[in-house]
Every structure is written in structure tokens, then in C-alpha cells.
Length: 232
Image (tube, rainbow, N blue to C red; front, side, top):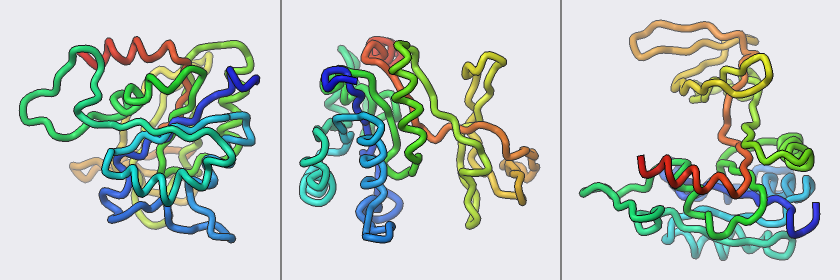
């Protein structure tokens, strides 16, 4: 892709650290002190991405500029979008008493003015792997503007140290996404998995199911659809 059509990486980081108690993406985890975001940006660069937009809260900007995004500035274009109640689509106003931003749609809309090419949406605190970014790049290089979800095999996303929440995907015969069902407590059971329901019952899973890890690809045309859906 040329620089004018190269995709953008949109990193949702506005909520990061709330439960962890700090900027966990700053904690070194690689053999040479690499952070989680180092891997995400590096893999995106190798797949042909040429800009990263961090969606953050305004009070996080100083930490991002001095500790995180500055380390990428000499390798890739870096910009910031702010997810807050003052950044809402159209004439939409928050209900009285609302103090928290909304979820993924609100986060993505916060960056609408900075996105002009196909773009990937990822969580700041997940690791996706180089193949995932290459798959997105190949999707766009085929000439399509269709939205796309990168699915992951469930057993490869489970933890040995407790339950995980995952969006379990239903895929039709043509490979199109038909449904995502959010499951809040999935545990490993050998090569398989179990959903633990609130009432104590369990639902067995094979482990081969596809799940969403919030890695999606869109073209800029999606923003108008998001604006309409957000207002409703």
C-alpha cells in the first residue's frame, strides 16, 4: 500500500489501568524489556501500517507522551484522540448524571477526525500476534471495504490462572459473522473449556470455537453508521 492508503492502528486505551492500578502496558515483559504496546506497534508496522492513534483520557496524555507513545514517534506517525463526554457525535448529549464514557463505538468515534484510511481497532492490553495484522492488511489489499473481525481459536486465548471473558462467535457457512455472545466466565478444561453460568450450571465448549478479542477492521465509511447507531 502507498503511504496515502496505508492502514492506521487505532488503540483503545482510555480505560487501561483502572483495575490494575497503573499503566500496565508500561510494564516490561519481553526479553529486552519490551512492553505489550511495543509488540502491537511493531507487528502493525511490519504489516504495512503507518500511523497509530491512541484513544485515551485527557488526564493520561502526559504519561502517554512521556512514557509510551514517544518511543514510537520516530518509527510511525502518532496521534491522540480523547474519549470523554465532551466528544460525542452530532447533537447527542449525555443523560443527566452520566459521568463515564460509553464503550467501543464511542471510543472509535472519538478518533473519526484522525482516520482517513482503512483502520484496525485493538485493545491496548491484549496481544494479537503478527499474523493478525497481516490478515487485516491482506483483507484490505484484496480491494474490499467490508468490515472484518479477526477471530481467535478459543483454546489459544484461555488462561491457566482463572476464568476469562470472551465474545463467542457464530460463523455461517460462508465465513460471515452471524452473532457474538458475551460469556463472562470461561475456564480451561484440558483442551476444552467450560462456561460457568451465574446459577452454577456449566456449558461445555470444544475449545475450537472462534472468539472475539476486540480486533476489528473498518474503512472510514463506518463512522457515519456508528453515528446513527450511537444516537439510538
